[in-house]
Every structure is written in C-alpha cells, then in structure tokens.
Amino acid sequence: MHWIVLVGAFFIFWFLALQIVMPIGVKTPHEAGDSVVAGTDPGAPYKPNLGLKALIATGVAVVLWCILYALILLHVLDL
Image (tube, rainbow, N blue to C red; front, side, top):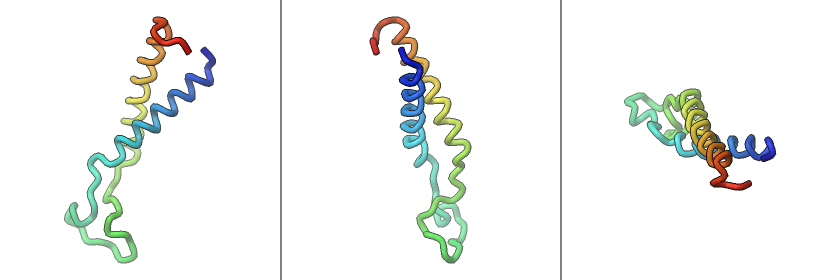
C-alpha cells in the first residue's frame, strides 16, 4: 500500500465528513433572534462554529481511516 493512497483516502474522508457536518446547527440571524446587519445576506449563518465542525470532521475522518486501514491489514480489501 503506497502512503499517498492512505493520505488521499484520509483527505477524502475529511472533506466528506466536513460537508456532512457543515449544515448541522446552522441558524440565520433572524432564527437566532438577532437583527440582520445592513449589507449582509439575510441567509448568512449566525455563528457557524467552523473550528468545532472541522474538529468533528477530523475525528470522523480518523475513525473512517482506521477502519479502512484495518480492512487493508486484514486483507479484506486489496488496494
């Protein structure tokens, strides 16, 4: 197994997990009870918590990558 394949698999897992986590808990300023600032899009997220979502995506990607690596070591998958 070439290490580039494993690194690429991790980034694919991370990006997929990030795309799944991004819309969770997103509220607009109107839904949050705050006023919309002039010049901003009314549908823009209010406190999107991107750092937390990136950490969650990293954790999910690590778990999925470990499962993939275990399947490769057990010869269930042959890449």
